[in-house]
Structure formats: structure tokens, C-alpha cells
Image 1 (spheres, one colour):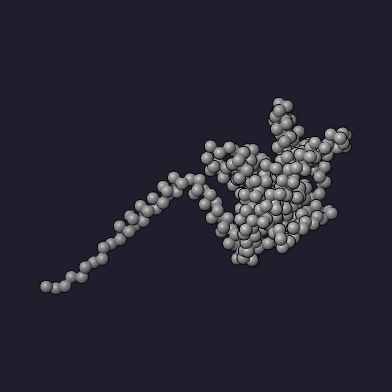
Image 2: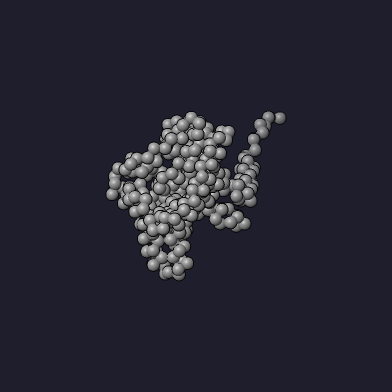
Length: 304
């Protein structure tokens, strides 16, 4: 895998290599994304709750923390876009109000396009919007489908990457006509390592400026977790069938849209077997009634 970074936009452009094509499932982790901003914003919100700040003060405290992270990462258009989308995604997960979150997403998208119309032709911007839209529309709902015996953090850890992948799949297939069957499980397994990388890596920067000798601790934690992500990427990249060919052009996009819709139905059906059985029995009864109402064939009467 070869990664190239633009000096101005800090965008991560993926170019496939013949030996590790499936590592592209983790390329979104190499650039500042909405997930990183969500983690930073969520961390400041939790810290504000520990300090027992009021809701307005907690919001202002978290916003200041996110602005500091943007300045630290570099106020490039891609970083600002990630900060906006990360805020929308976190609001959707925390609030659970899809209507307001969807309105916020639309307003944020319009404002970003007005500030920089060139983003309309940016694939990274499109993927960010689609991933956030998937989280807003599907993540909370899919997490609610999972039985209550499953921990909520695990349910959210599966629902968030699944919802984002369902909406981003058609665009990814248009860019690279391949299907990676291990993408979801790879992101779920690597998900717990992303928070320590982002949080400890961010903490290490200001500490290094004041106490360089103390910064070794958070750097070591972040480095160890980053090494774990790299190891997982190599593991999944070498599994059989890690990159399956997919149709190109409109046929591939259409088939991926259909596949995403079937995936949602399959997930719902597997988590609600009783309802599926009830629907099947109801359809069977309706079919039997329709067949029973068919008029019997008239018998031809012959004269005596």
C-alpha cells in the first residue's frame, strides 16, 4: 500500500499495491477524519461532566477543545470539514434525534459548500457527508435492533461502521471496483484502538512542549495502539478473498446500492426472527386466501 499526502489539503489518497490491497480498509485512519474529531469532542464533554459544568458551559468547553485540536492538526479545509462532520455525528449518537441531526448535517454541508465550492468535486467531502448521513440515519436505529444483553458500547461499535459503510460503499466501488468482505469486522476490531491513539496522541503534543520527558508515556501508548492497528491491517489483508473483484461503472454502483439495502434487511431479519416468522406466516395466509377465492372452473354440461 502506498499513501500520498498533499502538502496543502492533507488528504490521504490511496493507491493500490499488488500485495496489500485490503489495507485500504484502514486508510481513513491515516487522515484527520470525523471520527477523530468526535473522539476529541466526546472526551471534552466527558471531562466537563466530571467537572459538573452546566450544559451551556460544557458545550462551550467542548467547542474550545475541538477548536484547539483543529489548530493543532492544522486549519486546512479537510480538517475543518472533519470537525464539522464529527460534531454532527456525535450529536446524532448522543442526542438520538435524527431529525435535528439531519437538519444540522444539511446546514453544515451547505455552509461548507458556500465557503469552498470546490468541495463539491472532492471525493473526500462526499465520503464524509455520506458517512455522517449513515450515522445520523442508521446508527442509532441499528444499535436499537441489537438485543439489550449486548453492551451498548459494543452495539454502537458495530452499528457506526456498518451504517457508514453502507452509504459509502457505492462511492468506494466507483473509485476502486473491489469488494472487501472483511472491512466491517476489521473496523470493529480496530475500533477500540482508535480512541487511545487519538486521545493520547493529542495529549502528548502540548505535554511535549512543556515537559518533554513526560510526553514519552502518552506517546508510547499511542504508538503501541498504532502498531496494533497496523498488525490488524496486515492480518486482514492476507486473508483469502480479501479483495474480490466487483463490476465497474453504473452496474457496479447500482449493484452495491442493492447489496447495501439487502444488508440492512438481512441485519434486521437476523435480529428479529420472531417478526420475520410472523410476516412470513401472514403472507402465507394472505396467499392461501387469494388462492381460495379463485372461482372454480365451470363444468361443461352436455344435453341429455
